[in-house]
Image (tube, rainbow, N blue to C red; front, side, top):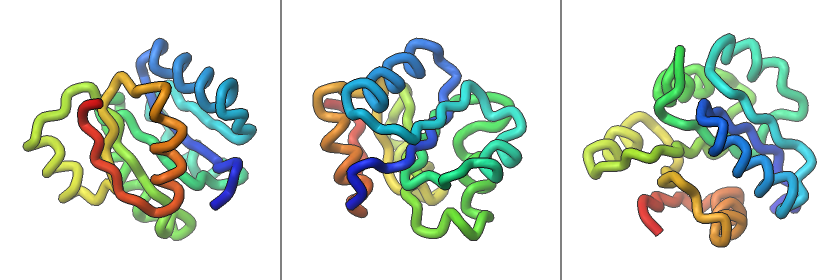
Length: 136
């Protein structure tokens, strides 16, 4: 497992972006973190990523393309392959979890994320574990 995974995070909430940036770059000392504040021009953004992400975190309720739309775009890219794509959402009902699984997400994390357990969860996702953590 790479000690310094490349992360892509799409999130429209400024507080969530700030928290994730502090966590990934500050506490976890990751050097390759890309955070998009919306899904405008999403395909162009992901094509231009270098290096390509090892883990992709998608907020479900983003505009103009929601998490399900972005997932479809990503799965059509050859370079994505088996890269874990994990949904992040504040509104998680059991029906939504089923929708996320059926759509092809590799896991789901409820928001707000727990800053104490997140580094370990990220490592587990990177090692191939599927995590459907809805509540802490």
